[in-house]
Image (cartoon, rainbow, N blue to C red; front, side):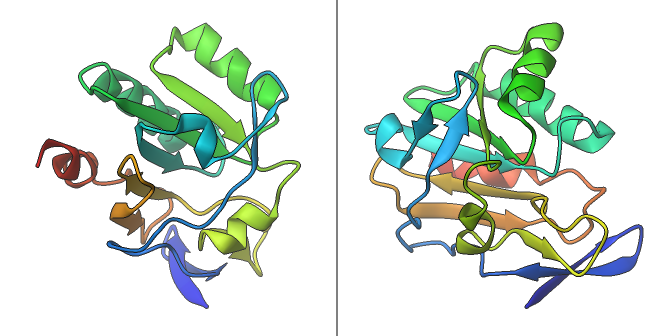
Amino acid sequence: MQQITRAGEPMDVAGVIPAAEQTAPAMVLTNSDLQDVTLDTYAGKRKVLNIIPSVDTPTCAMSTRRFNELASNLTDTVVLVVSADLPFAAKRFCGAEGLDNVKTLSTFRHPEFLEAWGVALRNSPMEGLCARAVVVLDADNRVLHSELVSEIKNEPDYEAALAVLKA
């Protein structure tokens, strides 16, 4: 079991985040139209998975806004914001914020994603939510970069995540 912190207090994270050079684990998540999607839905595109606990928290909202801004400069790349939020809530957030360069995906029907991707919060009041992480995949779903953010209240390293797409 991995550990991160929330305001300095340890939190357990089950599973192992995919590492660079690995093939990404399979996933099924639900999009804002209540359709289940997989990595094949985005075949031929590079993928940035911005994995967050909930768009209803300040840091998650900020990272979603930031990746939306950065995504406008990326070619052949889709930014997927993954959370346990209901698709309705994520869609409402992006609509209210004018965010159209990210796609929101929910784990609400597919909690197996959490452990398969190494972001399952355990043994805390936040159990059932995702730990904050970023995973960048190439068009063939090979992991180029991954970061499990060690303090859940911190933003991810945007530059490190996107640098692998510029290489």
